[in-house]
Amino acid sequence: MTAVIWNPAQESVEEEDLLARIEALKYAGQSPLFDSSGKLLSKISKAILASPRARAAPQYVALGYWLRAAALKRMVADFSAKHLSENGSLLVPRGLALHLPPTNVDTIFVYSWALSVLAGNANIVRLSESLSADTEWLVDLIATVVAQSEESERHVFCSYSYGGEFEKKLSRQCDLRMIWGGDAKIETVSQIPIRPDGLSVGFPDRKSMALISAEEYNKAPAETRELLATNLFNDIYWFDQMGCGSPRLLVWIGDGIDKSKDLYQRILSIAEGKNQTVEAGVAIGKIAFANDLLAESIGTSACHYSNLLEVTDVIDPALALERTQGGGFLMQTNVEKIEDVAAFTSRRIQTLTHFGFSEAALNRLAQSISGRGGYRIVPIGQALQFDKIWDGVELFTHMTRRVIIRLN
Image (cartoon, rainbow, N blue to C red):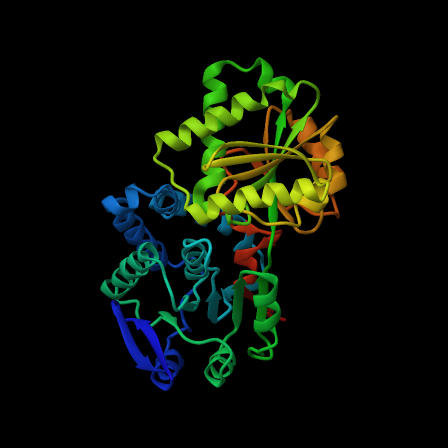
């Protein structure tokens, strides 16, 4: 069987050759938050932001800014304050980390890998065997910077077939495995053992929603509404609404949602102004999905704004959120107060974005969903921003070990 390795360009190799390359990785002797780690990531940031191709894709611009030296310094300072100050112990890398990113969000592999780099780990990133042209460009860019920085002995970007003997041999080398993707993928991969003292962390299917105060929207000036529509557009249309943080349900809180169409018209105008496109099959699928919701009495009415945007009113938000449809499909509902959102917040809910609420109201929301679900409560426009705490997991902590040191 053959595999692909970015060396730094794509190169077909035998699986045994790839395994030998992985077995030769250097993953000892480098401390967490080592200076060279930040320098490597900063170089990648500069390469991304300098590319005209990246500047045309908002998700790549966001990635480039996340990797900037100034942003990394703030992150390192935060890590240092939380993790390096404990007396009587030493923070060390976990060792060799295997990253299995999803196919629907083509920047997750970079965020996962970058945090592991800061943790001092050696890394294997297993990419899909069928990458988009943009993702291939991004992998080529990163692998090139890694090679130019003489870090290729610590990091491997590759693709190989799932389910074979090779995957079992590779997994047994790993101290950490980060599985990003659907429930079925996590269940299947988790059956393959890693090192006995290794750690495997799964990030399963999640759904997200946006919460808007009807009262605050109704009295907001035009410029505030336009900014909200722009932020919501970004949350919806990046990654074709298939990211875990992408809102599927818009919840209007309070009376007076008569201005909801104003918001949707603004989103549609922004989408058209950005030359957003939707494939014919996706557009047809959205109409069919709306009709399914109506036929099953989950939805009460549907509005087809254009092929770019479909909105369906639903009376059973919990059941509606179990369904998946991307490409600019929103379900909406109305509840009296923000605590009512808890009734349809399950463990499968990841992000709740918000507009028009006080800190006290958001604290009531957090308390009401405690133990039910919901891992992020952030402003609309930040649904897809990656954070070092993801799905309730503090990633840096899981990517390191702590060695106890006692003098007597």
